[in-house]
Length: 279
Image (cartoon, rainbow, N blue to C red; front, side, top):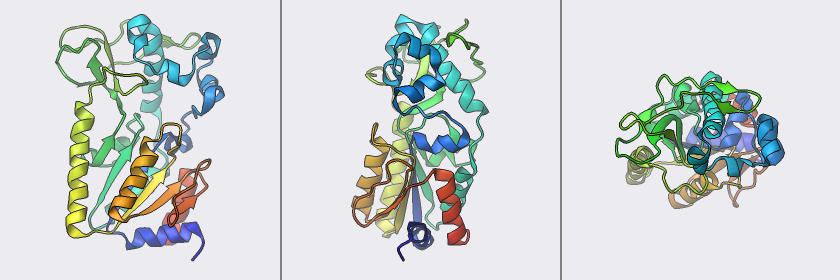
């Protein structure tokens, strides 16, 4: 059996549990912009090209102090975009495959868009290792903790990508708020919510080890530029003796003995489910 789709389908059919890991490429089939490289970022946010700002430079907490209207223009626009974006059918396929496993599934994602929750995945079975844009925290760290974005409706000037007042404030002290998202050079991120998710994930993994469960890792759209997801997938595949199925259009390479599929997530998952007979 040499067709990677066949190998992936057979591996999933034989698995007791599924770990679904996902990076930014997972959202491309839902119509989300690809921020790969400066040109990709600037196509989505033309004013940033005029300012000479890359994605890494813009995704920096300093803007919430230096230019909060610009910071909230960027993150507010993303918040509004994610809210109106419907997760593609690949999410539903992964959910069906995960729920069919006798020992269940867990999701590990660097995406902050909340798409897995909107696609019906159990929130108690998701790790958002870089936080989530639907949750805010106090910029000054007053101690009130993380709170939901709630009714905040970003109003953005499409020409400048600057947000109009009123900007979000802390529910405890009325100081400025920021998204509970891990940014570049971010020493102020409140990790409490993600820490709780990771504790549940560790409990899931302990259960798999105790039962000797057979795990398959299905990774979608996780690149090497920010390698958190790829490294986690490979580490857990090694430590748990799991098969890694990496679905990645541009960087499908895997360690020896694992499965690489050079495809977008939706196309590959559709073919895998068809071969697995719905698992």
